Image (cartoon, rainbow, N blue to C red; front, top):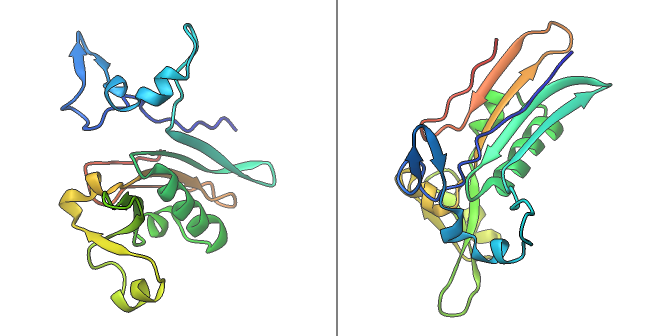
Length: 176
């Protein structure tokens, strides 16, 4: 059974605002925010592509195709795959669980500050973790280091497809 997982690669800080579009071709702004990665690449080599895509197989059969993007893509990858693989959630359940985001850093001393979506975690639990934390409103989540997950699962018994996508912005997922 053919399977694919894809994501776009515009790689811009703000989709639609910091890229140049010429005759329908989008030219992102990674040169503005990935100077260190660009400097490490030799002429003619490909730039690193931080977005993640994957396919999960069970007994050799594809059951999940996924793609992640956004500044907190590694955090959202971890959360979503643990929810799906370990806790047995559907893609819809996994995407709608509370997020934690890319950490912020205190400019005074460089220490990490954990970022969480406002109101999604009990403050007593966050305090008990023993690390500095802050909440990020959903309007500012993009700047709080959110990751975006889009996934399609196929029930290996019935063949029924289910799709889910990021639950805060204009993301969409379809399965057919």
